[in-house]
Image (cartoon, rainbow, N blue to C red; front, side, top):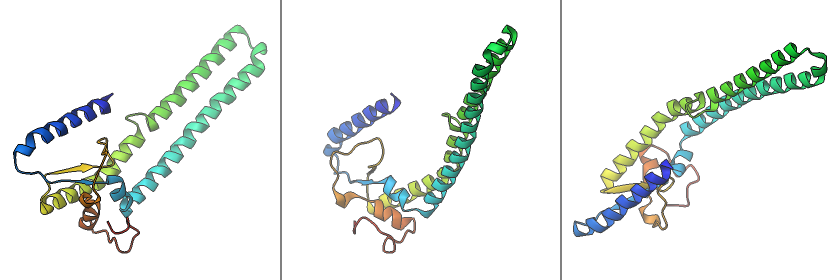
Amino acid sequence: MHTTRTRTLLGAVVLLLGLVLPARAQQKVGYVDSEYILSRLPEYATVEQQLDRMAQEWQAEVEERQREVEEMFREYQARELLYTNEERQRKREEIVQAEDEAERLRMRYFGPEGELFREQERLMRPIQERVLAAIEEVATSEGYDFVFDKSGDFVFLFAREQYDLSDLVLEELGIDLESTSGRGGS
């Protein structure tokens, strides 16, 4: 819902700019492909690997907790008839409590404000700030008034390759495009 509202607002702003700005001097617009840029940064790959390792470790811990709950439930089912009413109630409560703990653990790691999100934010922020600074430098030095991200929520129905600033941004970041496989000279 939020991204739809953002997209609609961005679309309205772009439409308004398209109607109002032609009366002014012609605007220079370019775009970058942030996914392409990030994929070419060695530190991004390192951070991605680090986050993947964390996520795998945490997922294994959550799955182990869930297996323990399942084992408790199987044991309860196998012995249910042997338990008194009080023991049955106590065992059911233990199972529910163990399920709740497993869910809390999953949310602690993978929830919207979980550890994975916080680590991703902490590790990616310096890279994102560096890329943004490079984009601003290229846009300023090349005289662009607007630069859009082709990979983001703003969808391009058409984009001329000549306005793709991604390789210039990579050069600004110090990435040697000759030694890595690029887009074929763009």
